[in-house]
Image (cartoon, rainbow, N blue to C red):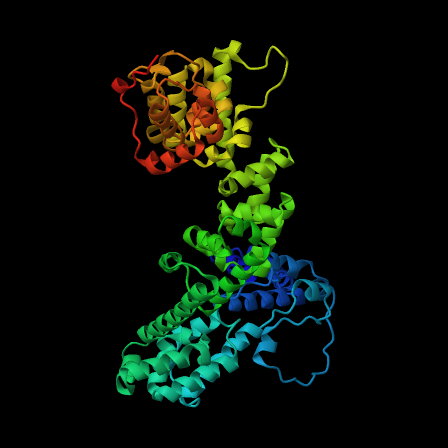
Length: 607
């Protein structure tokens, strides 16, 4: 192209010179043009390396048309010209003319061989940078399509319209070429031809090509037999011919129903799973099939082998209790491959945290099954390493054992919540520096966040904006801002309690019984005894109210101390009050659930 362009340009200039009667100038211009043209033609002659690279690029483009990835051996277009100008064969072509060699007999090559770059062309660069590209997937697709079409059509009478009708089938066959074998395709074709006319079978393969990958004996045959028995052969043939896609969907639904019924019997009879958990599994997004049923059975078998049955029996539980928790909250955990996913993840946790079978059973009983759905390398290991920066090995184990859901958090979420408590502590000490604990003794205390992690890790899985922050505000209002950090350190479990149903009713009980005076906005104004935040953790319905009413009914003159009514065991409380323990337990069992907060007007105790 460059040589031709140069000739045209020079010819135009020469023509202009001739017109202007400049014969001498025109002869010189024509001579220069001839020399330039010959030189450009010689230098632009493609070398062997250039031809090989161009051929490789052409083949790669051909593969790309069918959706096959490049093999990494195709040279970009910008490098082809460099190969032409710098290769040894190109240099030899400029310097000397090679003698003609005797013509060699032409060997017969297939189309694929002619399109594949040769590796033995005598050029070192060709064998390394332009390696042959495998064509097996394309040949496999062609073989499959030849088998399919030959089953329904005459190979010598195929038109363009026929080829277009098979376009969707060819696209699916290319997509499923890795798993679809000639034997599988032939079995499906023979089966379809046995249950419906050839024209209908051809339509099924053209419209619902995924049928080619379905197992005949386990999938297609049982479902087809069922529909023939239910609908009758004539209606069955009409259904297939009218809508092959719908027929295939009905076959899938039928097989799913069979697999589901089999799984229900297996879970109920062999593992003792309740109907409530089974219905929950059915309502989930888990797809039930023969393969998933086998995976669920393998998962249950493995979990049963690592559980401490003695620990479960003491608490009147079984392995099915753990299984039901998984089904109710994380049904996908049962579908994990046991050997490659579930078992390695469970073993990693047990090894990393030094868990025994009993520890792992407790971990699973407290909701640790969801942790098994996360990757050990990408999720669990980074979270444990971050927690290890704040806790020692034993504290880390205790923390995870108390709240397994902590491992389900994103590491960024946990970091932001740790920073939340650190910020509270920094702002508090900046304002109330005299209230900093242990500063006088020179003891460096652990941060508030670490203190909460070791005692009440459940706080970190709560919603901070709607759950934790309102409780912190309530505690600060009741006991004052100056003692906020000290109270949070002393009883961090308060942040996991409900303000309306736990904290306020308990504080109201102390106010009604005269232990403390509380204002209308829930602020302590006056207290007879120090009401520590530790006393707020006492259960109102199972401890405070039964003890208070039983003392009033048996010994009205006795006023129990706050520590006795809140902290002591039932035996110690009855001993201090001079009461019968069995009578108290019977009173608690009979009247405890119905007891209400006392009326202040009825609390006139005998002096």
